[in-house]
Length: 131
Image (cartoon, rainbow, N blue to C red; front, side, top):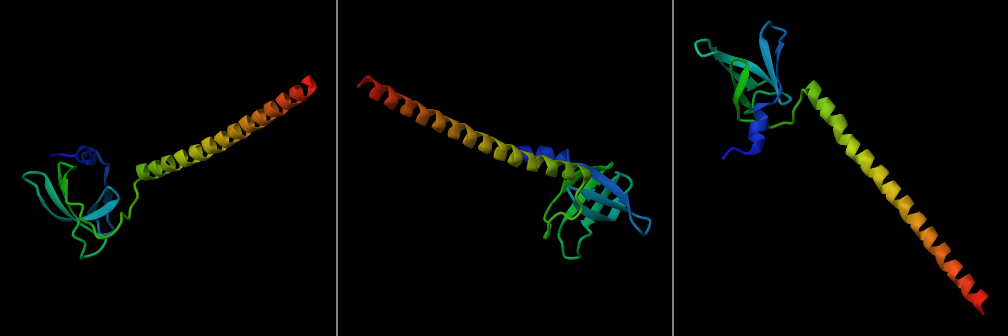
């Protein structure tokens, strides 16, 4: 039932940041949540997305770990975490490598063609020489 992505989501970085009003906000998967209420008996805290009032995004943390999140945001993530930036840099590299590989392949193909043409030319010369 649980997709592998679900397991990974559990491992997502969560960050608690102080708000201007002396409270605490939660940043999880790039979304920022404001504290709604907390149940101190169980160390459970309920959060709602802080982006806009009509966003249905919610999260629940237990002892500073995200227990669940519905992830039903009606907007893209707004607060990229440091590790997201890092991730972003990684995403560009394959394209650079692909471009380099493509250029190398083209270069190799051109060399092969040049060799091939040279070879043909050489054969023809030999042929004429034979006559």
